[in-house]
Every structure is written in C-alpha cells, then in structure tokens.
Image 1 (spheres, rainbow, N blue to C red):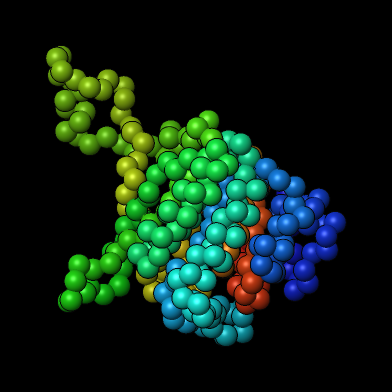
Image 2 (cartoon, rainbow, N blue to C red):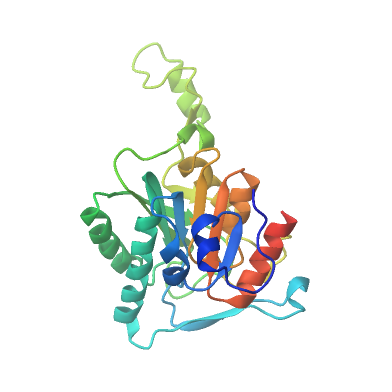
Length: 284
C-alpha cells in the first residue's frame, strides 16, 4: 500500500490518475477527482458541511498542529439553494467514481438531509442507481434540550449504483436477543432456526459519539468515531476493496479503511485538516 503524502503540495495530474490510493489530497474533489479513472471505488463516503450556517471551531488538542485549533465555515451566501447546488456537484463526482457494485453514503443531519435526499434520488435514478437505506446514527453525548426533543442523531443516506450491490451482513451481524432465541426453540411457529444466532443490524446504529476526553479525539470539530466508519466499511466494501472520502476532514474514514485492510484515498480543502489526516494515517 502506498504511504500517504506528508507534504503540502498537490499531486500532479499523472500522479492523481495513476496512484490515488494511500494518499490524502489538498483541494476540492471537483478538481482532484476529475482526472481519476471512473468506476474505481467500492465505497464513496461524503461527510460534507451540514448547512448549519455557522463556523465550527475545534479544540487545540493536536500536538501535530502546534496547538492550533481546526476550524471551518459552514456558511452559504446564497442560502440553501447554493448549498444544494454545491452538494449535487460532489454527489455527481461520487457517482462517477463508483463501481457498478459500489455504494455511496451521504452523512448529514436535520438541517438539510430532507432536501439532499430528493436531490440524490434524482441523481441516482438517472444513472440506474437506487436508494437503499436511511441510516440513523444515534448518540447520547452533549446536553439535553429544554425546548424540544433533544436532537441526538445524524442521518446517513445509502445509495447503490445498481440492485446488485455489495453488502456483507455477516461482517456486522449482531447477536439476537434472548427472547428471539427462546422463541426459536419453540417447536411450532418459530421464524428463525436455533443456529440463526445473529442478524443484520437495524437501520438505527447505536454507536457512541466521541466524548470530550476520548483518546481518539484529535480536535477536529465534527470528528466521527472510527467505530462508526469501520462498521459501514465492513458492510459495504469487500476485503481488499477501495474507499474514497471526498470531504475527509481529519481522515477518520481513511483510518478505518487502513485498519480494515482496504485501499483508501481522500481529499479536503482545509489545509490543517489534510495535515492532521496525513499524520494520523502515517501513524496508522
């Protein structure tokens, strides 16, 4: 596996075309991925800004960045219209990169996911793809609202390029409850066999978010846990397959892919995020 680039330069055109794997690129995926071959990834993950209309400021916990905090602006001069146009362009990049058996994950929250789903439905339908799941990542960190039900989940939209997509339920199977196994022992009316001790996870993923003191935390303001990305990659990317993250932030999806022996590549427009991602992957 190629080692990630540790310097700040952008790869030239030939390098991007021939060897995207094992590298984190500085720049917008619209230009970075334009010279890559089509249909090269088994899984494309996109965790873009969420249209929060505010600045996100991380903590200065990373010694790799000399105590500097990581920040990015999630503001859009033209409002929702401009945001959705920006997002659709990057979804179309993802579609181009996917293999016929590939999967696409768009990670958002309540701010704009309902608009994004309608847009993605159109993009994938015109290419023969299909919507598969609305995954809910439920977490319980942070404070509780006194004005409404507390907002404690993100939404991950799962699309495939065809109905013959890769999915390995056994890789992420969870044990069945005691009640289900008791019913399996019933001689009549049992819906499962005694040997069927595990099942595919539901579409609500109960994986803890990173608490402020987690050793894994690196200071990036919207950092996701490696455990979440490892679960998604195990299910949707075959062994030895390839993962592309088009807004990689501090590189969590890439670290998860490296841990699982998948090929990976990513890009981001934030130089400090790219620096941190490269250092995390070098250590990994």
